[in-house]
Length: 351
Image (cartoon, rainbow, N blue to C red; front, side, top):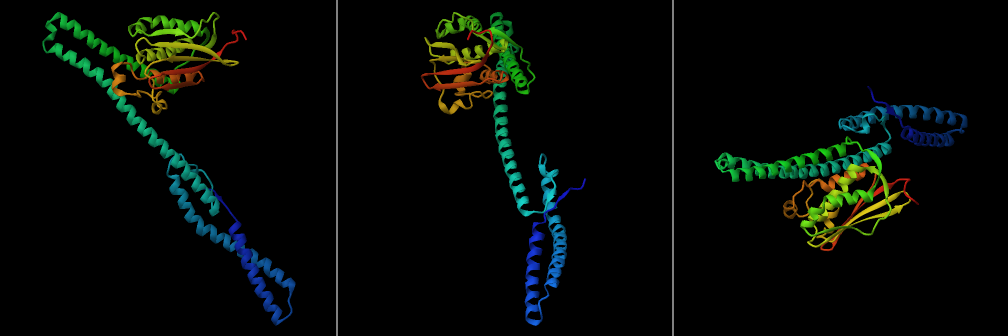
């Protein structure tokens, strides 16, 4: 399909005006010094000269400039996702310059975005490779040891099979988390909204993690006694996962004899904010902006020692955002961290 030509008459009009004005003045001076000035003749001359000049200049401009500018449009239109492929060709240089600048700016943003994505992709693939490689090699090592003769010893066999099983469980855990986060990002994981008591849900998670917290002598507690239920509207199962992931993190990186405190506060009329505060190791400021990235490690060696898939906080962020809510983090090294997220209250709450 041929491109449409967006005509501009400014150049032809101005050029014709200057040419006719000059020629008319020269002709008028000539008539003044040689004979009487014939004003009607001068007017007819000016009008006819203007019309002829305008047509000739406009035609030549379109033919001369159009062919060169069309090549620019054709070259640029070879790139995908460009508005130039469907835009009418303009012969106005100012408009063309503005369009080219706008196009260049847009492409620069696209290139910068692609560079960031490429770096993220490399980082992600490296992290996935490492996270899967460690348990795979562990399982392989135990199995090869058994095949080399250790299978004959019943105690060694059972011990190594148990360790290999733990490695497989870790692989399954990572794959499940990856599957969930992929669905969350693609919008393929449906949310089942219902009304429930967030205080009761948090207490249930406290009970589930009681033994785990006791091993590190960490106390899980509310900031106060909540005598009345606080009803929210969300996906109960996903919110339990959010609270559980945040509490597990606070236990992992908490100090022995430490405390993790949860509070539920009114934020605005139809919102509450849930805060999970601990007095653990804390996180330095430079890591906070990347804390919710998949597999991001604050301190790689320390984080891998405590286990986990490295996807917990990323899953938390995606679940909260799937509820159209916000999550926040504040932390000071050797003081502690606070993760907080908002939820929608239901009409069952008393004003």
